[in-house]
Length: 249
Ligand code: NDP
Image (tube, rainbow, N blue to C red):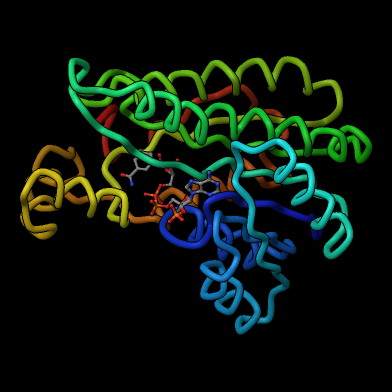
């Protein structure tokens, strides 16, 4: 069955792969990111493959922008019942150097963003008596040096997921979280740069720690998201799936 999906942070990386995968599974997809023009490649990939997609520019941490974005999706595609809260940023620093802005921006995009998007979309899910919410957590939720802000946000995503599962379950809505390990994307490319390493060396170094012996790809995460969004996953809710090539990164 065709559903209307919103994937946030879908201009690139994991979000783009997830949007493309959901479209392949037959859903119409709102490709949402900060900059609407940056969504063009993802939208084109979907439409060229015969799917249906629109680009939506919005800052997920801004409640007025979120409400306007969801209203646009309703107008242009229909009422959304699948939501993937993927938008994210990193502002890594050791605690003693971490600024309040580093803290607030990261918590704002990941946690406040997922809260605002879920609150706006659940109305349509409850009306449809069907829905899927997938939140992007991270292995960093278990703790990671230099990421006090990010690990707090990603652990918070797990708590949010479990509460959404409890509150929305009776309306046919499931909520699950994916906690990726090391995934090749612009985000990890930026980390390599910050550490003064070539991306190739960084990927090799990280892959050596992974039990399956390779770094993850955005498609690895998109595949798991597709399962959580499927009809088959209707009895799976409130779970955190570590997709990290091993039990944790
Ligand atoms: P990318 O940095 O490649 O993509 C993230 C996207 O989110 C960008 O297009 C970015 O836009 C967008 N975005 C940032 N802030 C906002 C905002 N306020 N509103 C809307 N969109 C926004 O990241 P990844 O694909 O690597 O990561 C996707 C998700 O997966 C994130 O939540 C990340 O924390 C999580 N994750 C990633 C891992 C990895 O190894 N890559 C590991 C574990 C979790 P812009 O470019 O304009 O900033």
